[in-house]
Image 1 (tube, rainbow, N blue to C red):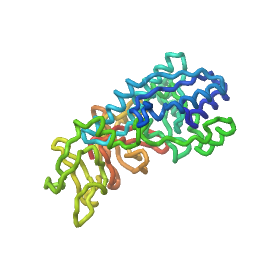
Image 2 (image 1 turned 180 degrees about the horizontal axis):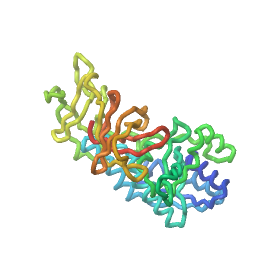
Image 3 (image 1 turned 45 degrees about the horizontal axis):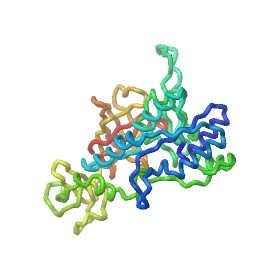
Image 4 (image 1 turned 90 degrees about the horizontal axis):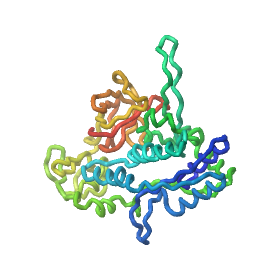
Length: 360
């Protein structure tokens, strides 16, 4: 429970369906606010109070779990270290990988819970039973599906899940659209029915990641050269963490043709810029690849691939490689393939898995 409308409705639906429900909320690391408070927006004092109110409405036991140390090490430090290394991370993937579906799931199971339910807009189903000609199996694997509300689908950030997690996962709001969830919240008379959504990085005090990096990773941020693809130096930059692939504004280079960030060379601390024609690629290599089924396909597959959370899926061939890696070749050139972001694979509504973009 986060004190938001989605997790609150999820809890209410489970109570309505007859489950014995326990409310869990994590205390996550956050940097000090200007006013002196120290808290993460996902578990602010107000969010904590709202979650407790909802739990009391349904007579649900409520526990706050301290996850600050683990969150700082697995998510926040990963965030700063990735930027310093010249890549653009997605901390939500790491939070779901290490915090929600490892740390929190273990806590839930230690309380003798059978499932961990969240307010994510995704669905889970068992894959179809095997044909009679196939060898019998004790338990069909679970599939991770997109949420019914395509605009709210969160399968991208849950592509890190596997069979061990999906066995114990429930997503009560995944079968609804966001407007339907708002309406259910009103019907349940939840005090959070109109609560706005939080969309920014939860551990930043002011939503300014550049300021955060200056405060928390200053020693790893060094000015360096701006170069063209051939290595010719045309200017200087203030630090690789302050730029991202596809960026046009703020580069500080006057040129006859618009220039974009097309890459970085961390080994020489160089920022690579080029024209719109030089931007993008039709392929990428992904590392730390997770296959939701538990094992990679036997050979290359054709799938739709998302290269960012809000990106449109693009058709590609995906070839599993050794060492939890994969090669992805797109049917058309994509402009914003960014190392550090997730590349997530789909077969229709089924999320097959994904990895972290290593290079394009």
